[in-house]
Amino acid sequence: MSEISANGNDYNTNDYDADTNSGGLSNGGHRLNLLPMLGDVMQEVDAVRGAGATSATSLAIATGSKSFTLDAAVTFRVGTYLRMESRADPTGKYMEGTVTASSGTSLTVNVTATQSSSTVSDWRIHAYVSAQLARAERTVTGAGTETVAATDMGAAILCNAASAKTLNLPALADVGVGFWFHAIGIGAGDWTADGNSAETINGQTTVSFGKYGGGLFITTATEWLFFPSSVGRQTVWIPAGAMKQATTSGPAAADAEASSNKQNYIRLDFDKDADEFAHFSAAMPKSWNLGTVKAAFLWTAPSGSGNVVWGLQAVAVSDDDPIDAAWGTAQTVTDALTATGDLMRTAETGAITIAGTPAAGDLGFFRVYRDADNGSDSFNADAGLVGVCLFFDTFTAADN
Picture 1 (tube, rainbow, N blue to C red):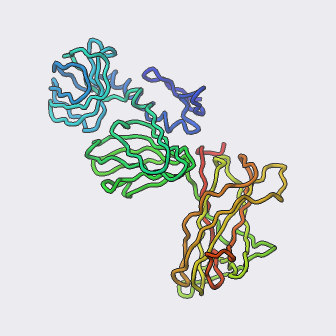
Picture 2 (spheres, one colour):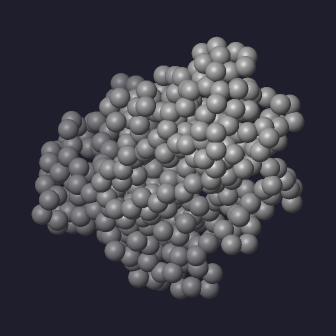
Picture 3 (tube, rainbow, N blue to C red):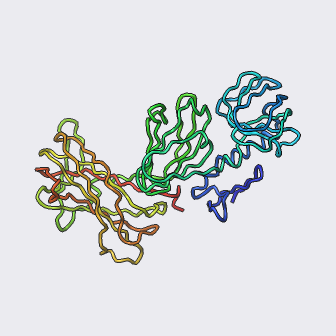
């Protein structure tokens, strides 16, 4: 185990545990502790080298906009979080806040945190990541939209929603350069970060996540940057060629080749008159969160028209469990063929609960089918399955 102590706080490379090892960086602890650790290190470096500025401006300690005349020209970036403290009593008399304007010897700060109400004229001013700021935590619940506020600077926003949730990001003009926060999904529902029609996130208008997905958001002069965590939603591609046709009621397999450019692929042709099934299995990684999964189906057809209803169900089998176990409840999705010979991709299914009692290292058995006798299945020919995208969520970055 490696350890570091900085600014009165201890960090280590062991697994994070809120009760027994709150300074851990492994097992997801990096999401809460990495930036606070860097901030603590920066504060110690800052104190050693005497970086920052000084001012003799006489001001009463209070929240709100405060203007300083600096003893020497120092330019701070708008949005930088500063601490203004009395050189004679730095822990007893100080203000903290975000730079709103800085030019030469003129500095304006929106103060949001204070200690004391005294009037001070021996200011030392420097960039700062307060323990309160770095470890702020806010949980958002319920479906719908939540807006990230300027007071969320440095916060960990935990999205604990059972259904879809959207976080609207503030405009760059409102928070400035260098504004940052973490957002992590901890509920069953997917969540989306939205630039709110005004800003982009890594060049995109939105980014979406599943449970445990998320990461660090930080502003530049022109857009939001997003640095994803190494855990969260994962995708596995299962081609039709990796599936086994059911011995009972299985689809026919076809070795297909495109007529002009000769793309070759295996297709499983599911009948229009009766339900047919294909199977695949997957040894689920230890990093899987043991929760629900979702699926999207990629398919095509050389002829026909109408809608196809695709379905998937699953069961998890542990060591010394019977393989002949009951399937879980299936989820289906309906998709229409827009043109023969085109590749079609369905929407994602709803959350699929895997039957059994899922445990780390289980073997998952999955059954794909066309629900031909469903009233919504109107496709009048064989539907050719090309493969399935399986989506699941992880809670650790490795399987050790």
